Length: 186
Image 1: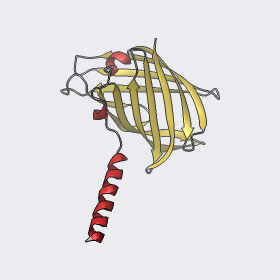
Image 2 (image 1 turned 180 degrees about the horizontal axis):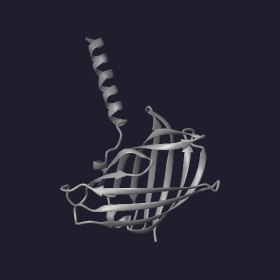
Image 3 (image 1 turned 135 degrees about the vertical axis):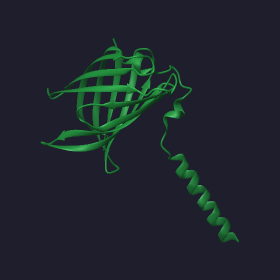
Image 4 (image 1 turned 30 degrees about the vertical axis):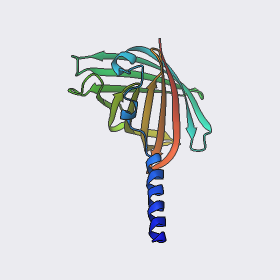
């Protein structure tokens, strides 16, 4: 009997520990303010400053981004273009142009599909409360070759002008590093 109780207690503790390690979901931020609206925030010019850290936490790249953003289309079916110009601390430059499509029929906040030249397939995203999450695969140039990596990308609107972004980059489920950005609307 004591052995059964010990096993049951151990199983319950293990389940509780695993539940505590569960990843957040975008629904966890539903009540947070200010309410994020990607169409409003990413409209006009947005500046960003960021770092890429390896899995040990060492900063291996610093960069700035200037984004020129615009939206067209009827309400509920808007299409956004986020034209990003990156400048890295070593002087190299990169351009990425995102096309975001708001998915119809999901209410005031919603789901988005995103594409860009170096994104493999489509990015899938959702906004709730002050947060936006999306996941996608990016074809990155690394040491003279390209590798496809997974991005789990979280954005949190802090106020009308500032948004923070944290993205985890992984390959085959192994964390390679993180990208941290601070966006400021002009």
